[in-house]
Image (cartoon, rainbow, N blue to C red):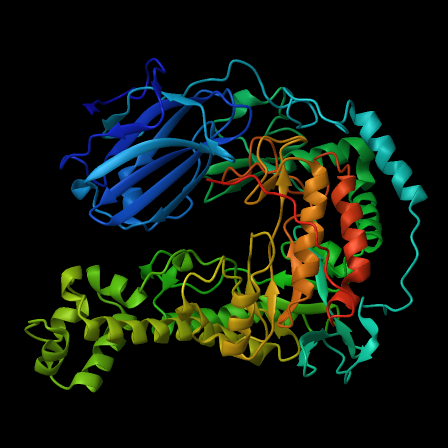
Length: 639
């Protein structure tokens, strides 16, 4: 592989993927792998960089837009597996790092592949180069790909807004003609009046002998069908992508409030949806948006305003809602990725401060409960936190606790060495120095570190949960919203939650996993995120689960929601999300067609009609009175 400085990665796009790389001992975490790429296909595609060290794999998967010349930069520091979703560079879309860790200087093989939904992608690249620094220049687009309404300018589809006036007229007409009839079996909370429990004035949980339920403040059975991110925002990362837009307002002008920064000013975001709403409705755009969305939520049969929704909408809509607590407690010292030093006094103090935000909630009966956080990155994979702590140099309170625990278990260092098959001179060696991984491979070492790993996770969950319950005893603790159950240790400490939450992007909720989680923690389960996107309308990517067209997307919604309701341990499914994402991508590069409405607020009628039908059946499916929707559309495989 060529070694270069300055403008590396430039050159003719003559290499078709897959392409083998030639790693060497010169590779190090301070180096950068750089090459130009172009996606010759019609939809989003990924370049996957696979790095292998012996039997350990590390994958860095980077999204590129169709037809857009993109300079891809892979810092070899990513191979340390401390970062899961890195920040963006110009023209580059979402990047996800998984697996590892591997040592860049010890990589035994490396390969580039082109992937997209459905199989291999047609991607050409220039000769990859290894550099000492990030590039200073980036390719420019031949022409903008975003029109005046922040739609994809190069494509047409049914329902695409032809002008701002037409879009505004459509929305205004809907507001004045919206008609729907209430279900007389539902109460004001959306609870089912045909099944009654004790009323406490707040949402709670109960098992009726057959299945778990949420119970609304009036004592009626409640199964939560919600939608996340009900807010008038569709932010796009413009930094380094300014050439992709026909027009953007001046950051210093009268519309400067549409611009925000993220990551300590490292990214610049513009709100394309709010820009459309302001131009369509004028000064009272927010009130009109609120009125329209409130009517839609009720008419479409949702009974819960999901996570990350606009706080004013949650406060004023008069609908049950859930909320995401902000700034989950962390510590200056991190054990692995975003996992804090959980046995430190700092973690306790920060948990106390974290719980304080619940004091302002008061006695809000519409609040179902709160999520502590969403998708902790340390749980992306079956990692042993105690082991990760030992193989890195540096002291911590959690490491001190581990050493003390090992002393209590094994007595002197001789007892530890005898059990582990090691030759540590003293316990102090374990307290701060990096321990080679090959010293932690015995059955006894793995058993000890596995048990302490569960103790760390239990402490992670218990400390902030106890502080939150002390401040707010009335509302449900909905847990940590794990991305998936990467290993059973994630259930450690979960008995402190009122509801165990998990995200699940599959054909349907996994009944076996849900029942296993519920039994382990003696609590019901809530799915905080799921979705299906399609490739036929407005955007070049369909999401984590993708089908061909909107009809299949509608069937997929029904299949998922109704099969979820049929699982006795599940008490709700929340769809991600209300709005489509921006064609140029949000802060991390996601640009998925997953919303119920597009960037001009036009509903995708197929999926909202399907939602209405399923929501009208949900209280018959849940107790087993009728079977769930049976027709599963075929998803396009995401390789």
